[in-house]
Image (tube, rainbow over all chains, first blue to last red; front, side, top):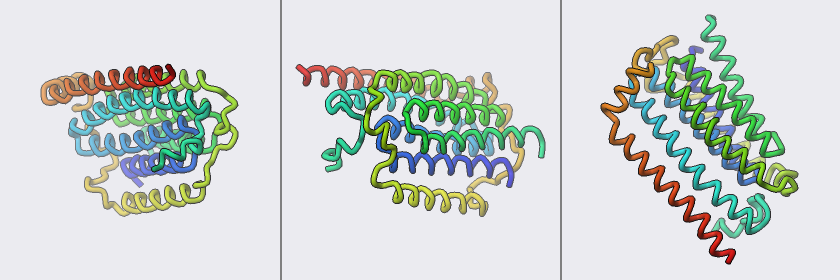
Amino acid sequence: MDRAQLLLLTGVGLFALGLAGVIVRRNALVMLMCMELMLNGVILTLVTFAQQTATIAGAVLVLLIFVVAASEIGIAIPIVLLLSKQRRTLDVEAYRELQG
Amino acid sequence: MNGSMLLTLFFCAGALAGGVLMLVARHPMRVALALIGCMLSLAGIYAILGVHVIAVFQVLIYVGAVMVFMVYVIMLLDVRDPSFLRRYGDTLVTGIIAAALLAAALAAVVSSGGAAVSLDADATGGAQFLVQPFSAGFLRDYWLHFELTSVLLLAAVVAAVAVIKGGRRKDG
């Protein structure tokens, strides 16, 4: 196994662990962090391909993804705090009516 | 196996260990610390690959801003929350099976060499990713994207303020 394959497999592993976390965990904040883990798996894959092809487009895209992730957290955290204020819990089981 | 490959292996193992810890840790603070460890390992990988700009931004933006914000919020919250005591919901088995199947399918594609680029062991994008050439290329070819991100950040700030103000109004 060469280095690029190892990095791609690590990216796959991080994405799968993050996905498992989003599905199985009950705490809304932990779910948010697991989504960040999935994003990090994708970013690792993107950087690996960018480095292999020696183009800066992939690295630029990663920088833009950082900005999007920061914006996402900036909006998601106030929403989570408001939910927590209303129901006094971060347990997603308490918000079952949101599933439609 | 050279030193660079050994370091890559070490950081990959660190990142995956952080991911596993996030799944099993009970308290969100421990989950956040595991995620910080994972992100620092990834920054190490980017540094080894020679993509220094991304390594620096990984530490500055993710660990320095996003995770500090997250840790601050966790400290604000009640530690007796029921979701702190019962970690997993009813979807435990389904979630693990789904994630394992996805990981197996993607790993099979990567291992079989189905990836679009040639997986050259020591291919280095090298020169393009050093800070100076990267910054020059970034601001020459991608300045519009860079400016658009400032609009996105502004929209995020306005949205966050709107969410908080909306919540306060509802509280009366």
